[in-house]
Length: 405
Image (cartoon, rainbow, N blue to C red; front, side, top):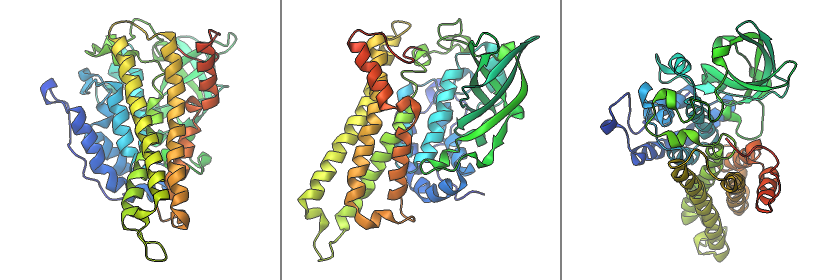
């Protein structure tokens, strides 16, 4: 066993619509897990993956079903629900939240697949999870009935718990990029490829695929294909499945950084209420500390509201039309990178105020400090890239980098 078993809020299985959990129930389930996640955080970091019990707790609480089609026992909830749950989980453990952010998002993305693929993924087990990864040199060689795939994917978060992978390769000869899905039996996880200073428990290891036959049916559907918006799954909430993979889906990753900041703010506030200076004075009376708390709280509240507001605005538009305007794609990219900056600033300010006590490895603050900076380093959350794209867009210049679905 990897650790103590948490007591998640409510075990949820396949249910009819009027028995599905509410947003509030899912968020409360996440809050209820935080003390156990804090307790498990050192173990999560040492394992370099989320403990098995944590992934099981997420499954029992229904977190991976938030974006799963109802046809397969899921909830088809709006994407901002998943992000709010992730923020709460990150109060306790950033690495565990990162696993949920990546694995939970993939259920939304793969819902835009053919009925045959959907049945293959989830008909027998709605708890099947998909990881991903990236290799700029991944090669797809055409052959009868499909392609031969060779790649060594990097940053395959949550790979230890995946049954399938979604990734991209480049067709030999033409160089055309194609998305593929591949079952676990063809994957080799490189165990010693993930030794890092932050978000170590995300388990973002390298995964190797050698001479894997990928049938044509396992090519991923593209935006605005006949399956776009979860049509083959018969979803009742198609808007949330039309969110852009490039400009909106990474808000789950942003939510991890924001949630870490929220966890630091809460723990720091409680500690300072009781802390005494070396001369016996109440630290809570220090104006400098009060100002630090106020500024960090403002940054956290702002980041949290931006994430939820951007998603809700995008979803409202997608309920009327197929895509959001180009300026919103650019705005979303800007914000998904800016919110981790706000989160890191909030954590930094309190980390330095904690003094030497925050440096001890058996404390949570030093881990949260490292994790919040690691989260902001993810390529989709890169401020320089996304801010430049936004600046070009509002100046009427051609965007650089991906913006649309």
